[in-house]
Image (tube, rainbow, N blue to C red; front, side, top):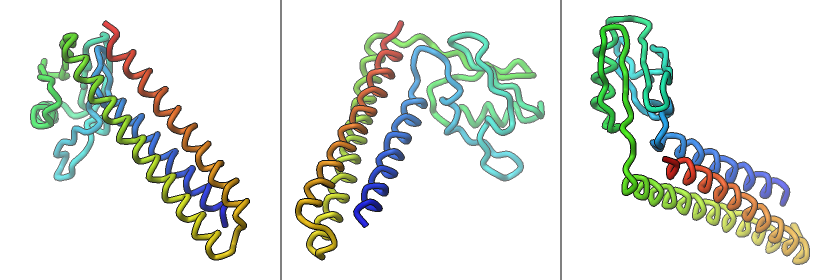
Amino acid sequence: MPKTVLSDMKTHMEKTVAVLKAEFQKVRTGRASTAILDSVKMDYYGNPTPISQIATLAIPEPRMITITPWEAKQISVIEKAIFNANIGLTPSNDGKSIRLSLPPLTEERRREIVKDLKKMAEDNRVALRNIRRDAIDRLKKLEKDKSITEDELKKYEKEVQDNTKSFEIKIDEAMTNKEKEVMEV
């Protein structure tokens, strides 16, 4: 029974770290990334569809994304979806493809982005601590129900704490890497 508590906790913590890393990928840095467009959905024959499913996304230059739709008539719809998504990029259309130029980030904007990244990381650390608290509460309930002894409870609590620390380190590493990427000129 305590093993299921620990495995559930690990699973939740892994998901928390994975979500943070996915959120970090969406954050705009000095370099182009197609992840910026992941949240942009467009109307494709009545269905909200991600751009990546109806067009080829490419990064020909470090600060440019090109979108080449598989159906030429979808260019205006894609362009409209990008405008409406408020991602801070203005599409330029050449009739066959759409180009998104990413302007260089100012030092001030980079610092704002880092501040936002730190807030995201802290929110995820709080989520980890909540997961830890829930796991410890479940273990204490097992001890109260006499399913485990007090010594076992202490051992499992230490294991929970060690796991929490290791996942916090993963969050810190992800934060440090993303901060370096953002501050890189």
